Image 1 (cartoon, helix red, strand yellow):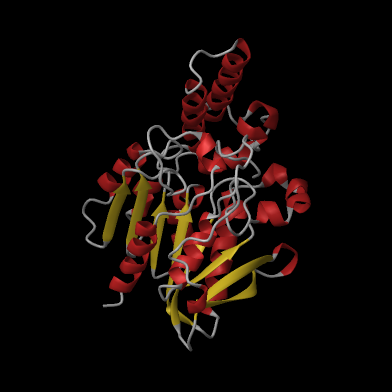
Image 2 (image 1 turned 180 degrees about the vertical axis):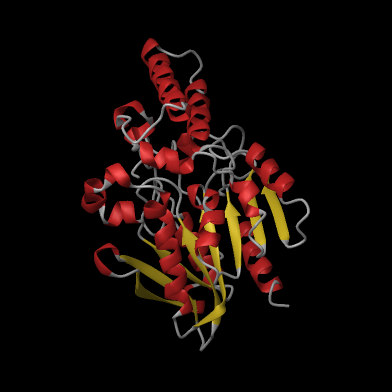
Length: 330
């Protein structure tokens, strides 16, 4: 799909700056192709210098037509992660999302698209790209999903066995339509008293969310009656999907990370992951008091305007991911 979860509607106020933890002298980059045929995707593989083979990580985007860096305003969180982790000995693959690279083609099939076509198929293809690379250890390929990508980690894991472990970053555990409505209410509440037009927009979204939840939702339901104009099949495919519950069946190590200032995916979701996976000794969870949805630092209530200010993924996040991956090798 081509919708975004409250990350747009602002003007960037600066340029991207490379984080101090990214050392270009420690890694190389090469262009790769993810997938085959008409829907193949251009990507960038950041590889530590040396012969390898190296442990490796695929980065899976959130909602919206994201580029390989998951660019939001002047910020590029996937570039931060790729360069930071490659500086720490982990090869990282990031790629253009299908809904950005093939917008016209996706528009032609928009009535039948689900998260499988939007995200899962290409995440699996990216894993296969890494497992076939001569400088990558095919037994140590991991997947990191951010936002919608994190929510879909259980489905990605079930679609591909050859994944050594998973990292869920700001992954929602609740129905997507509920998260969207919660985000919208939060954003409009920041302005205080709502105008009549703003109130009507919220009510319209509430009606659309109710339509998604209705037992009468069917493939014949007009897209115009649903959030973001997404087709009914998209919502029907996600009906009954409980990411935290399904993650219990993924018998591979998991690392779950959450910014405590995140208003798009909240600490309620983090608590749901913790509760569902409490019995798993191979699951580690960490939250960060000052970080937002992009795992960048800030103060007070998180606001959409934060995404317009230049920042970088916090160094502690890169350190925690690298340490977790390294620790699984011992």
